[in-house]
Figure (cartoon, rainbow, N blue to C red):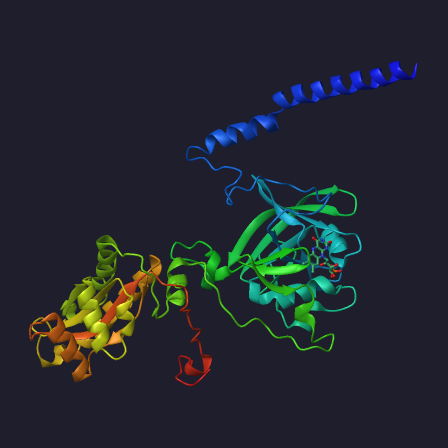
Amino acid sequence: MQKSKFLNIVLATAVLVLAILLAAKNDPSTMRKKSTSIASEGAQPSASDSAYVPFKKRSLGVRAELHPKPAAVIGTYDKDGKPNIMTAAWIGISNSDPLSIAVSMRPATYSYGNVTESKAFTVNIPSADMVRYVDYAGRFSGRDVDKFKETGLTPVRAEFVNAPYVKEFPIVIECELTAIHELGSHRQFIGKIIDVKADESILDADGKVDMALLNPLIYADGKYYESGDFVAEAGESLHEIDGLPYVPANRKKYVNQTLKVIHNRKSVRHFTDQAVSKEQIEILLRAGMAAPTAVNRQPWVFYVVTKRETLDALGKQLPYAKMLLQAQAAIVVCGDMEKAGNLKEQAYWVQDCSAATQNILLAAESIGLGAVWTAAFPYDDRTKVVIETLSLPEKHVPLNVIPIGYPTGEDQPKDKWKPENVFWYNQAGSPL
Ligand SMILES: Cc1cc2nc3c(=O)[nH]c(=O)nc-3n(C[C@H](O)[C@H](O)[C@H](O)COP(=O)(O)O)c2cc1C
């Protein structure tokens, strides 16, 4: 009896092992592993490649992970005509025709009653630097405080609907209530857009809103961001109210590609040994020749040096251009005294060649290269070194030598913005 029981167990185990082996043969994950290993013989990534990370999702449950969320400010009048603002992140475009906005409000908010009564609201879109107004309008209730008075913001009666908008906010959207949806915790108000007003200062040349100039505020999970960058913790900008200092972030980031390049440009003095192509150098030269030039004289010529011995010879002799020993190429920007014109116009060659140089430096930054302006003119000893090493004709006076190569990443841009260097004058000529 004992023996037959033992045999039954052995038999059952054998069947189970066989079933597992068969199942494994048809298991898609085993098959994928197989095909992955075959693919790895070719160009496909294999599981052993460090870059190959299979997607792995984790359930977070029921959460408001819809990103990015705007942080808008809703303007309403109460029954006595007092203007109020409240912050709303549960908001979005909800229909195209008629173009409508949906905003959800809790019954506890003062604004909820206001919209229900007045059947209108404005949506005021802030720039990221207005975070403290947004924070304030979302912390306090119009039932207890006059938020316009407390913030110093200016209420303006909307042109087409019975609601106030915030004068200082760059975009205001006037909405007329067209539907209400009871959703549970919130009542969703649907507002048909009657008019949109935007500050001219955030419009591009085509009259469209420039996102870089608007720099809208983004809200997510108790934090504010700009352009995807963290700005402040919710409530942080109200520290003053809590008796703590509020230190606004003193930095500026750009979405506009040109401004990004201008502000990311740095003097690159450390290069890798990666080669620089003729096509890349030509891009830089074209940018140089696109510079403004007095009476269109274009009093410039450009010598391109790529020979190792010549780069090294210049680097050894020029006291502030040692990085030429690492650079893959150099452009020598020269003034052409024959093209420079008469005595008066000749005085412009330095400005013109300087503008060309700056264009070259910016173009280098824009295509991932590094470069640095090393002066030759007005130093006699340095210009002599360049003239002799490159056997320049007398009419070509070198303004500078620009070493070029791929940056190692050691050199970083500097923030040179100093408001104290700027004097704003109003039209009457007196300081603002
Ligand atoms: C970033 C942020 C987003 C908010 N979003 C909403 C929202 O979508 N709906 C809502 O009812 N309350 C929202 N609130 C809370 C209200 O703004 C807050 O209750 C406010 O005090 C209401 O003002 P009121 O009573 O003057 O209308 C938000 C607050 C903050 C700070």
